[in-house]
Length: 339
Ligand SMILES: *[C@@H]1O[C@H](CO)[C@@H](O)[C@H](O)[C@H]1NC(C)=O
Image (cartoon, rainbow, N blue to C red; front, top):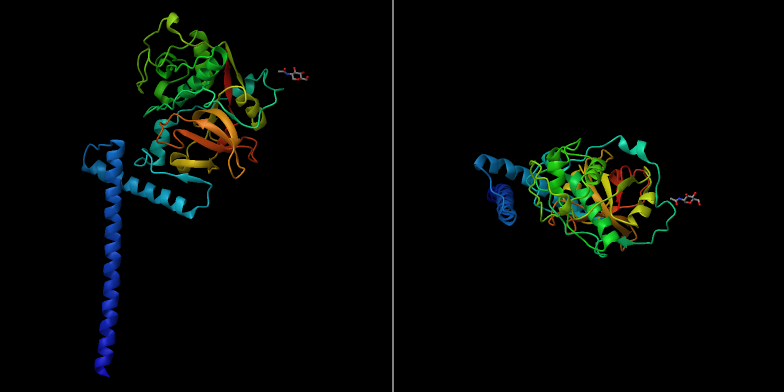
């Protein structure tokens, strides 16, 4: 009896001990695999930290982000996927502060005088990138001048449509020279960028005035250097996805969105359906629209966060949502240049 009892107790103790051990081991293994993942990620994006303290701090943020990304992807309840992109060691707050420089304006509601596309019939789908009216994805870097990228992409689009030439234009000229209420890497307004381009009688090319991603002094380019001009700009009627559709059917359109959420930060593929609010903080360009295989309508949006983000730098955002503002406020402050 005693022998049997002791043997059972011994077995139970052993079992408990081995369970603890295996838990400790799996936790260690998990931590080690995360450290390895971080190292591999650092190599792949070329990240170097100034010291061990910074590395430890960044590792912790990286780990939190990876856990969130894996949680969302495993749950599989959203129609889009997140990915460990080059922004994976930044908190959401750091990320939005350094990239989302759109200033919400009160300008919009005051200025709508006419909408030249009001009577057009929009085709069922549109993709200006396959029509040669969209330049390659650019990368604003650690400079919140999305407003310049958005205005430039819309200008590149109308220039191609009017002249037949797709010319990559200079964001840095806007960052350095448009010093009205636009503040370079500290943010700006799209309509102000258009007003600058009109007054400046155009913009020069990307190669003439390359992007640096810092606030510089204006290296005034001669008027004769200007590669594309616009004659004016118009706002799309406020809070109307159907009006936005008519505009995008005719040219790439600058739009402002609320891009502050974690799911936007790590968006990788699929039709993005939120979460997001309508506090507009990021400027991008609507370059098309369509419907996914499962019938979800979307806007095709060009971003300026490099090609590692999203679908090779693009995002498909759900279209025709219940809210009149559109998803993330996409229909609130849309505008396009005339040429
Ligand atoms: C659209 O059609 C209406 C009715 O025919 C007309 O009054 C209006 O001027 C048209 N708008 C434009 C921009 O052509």
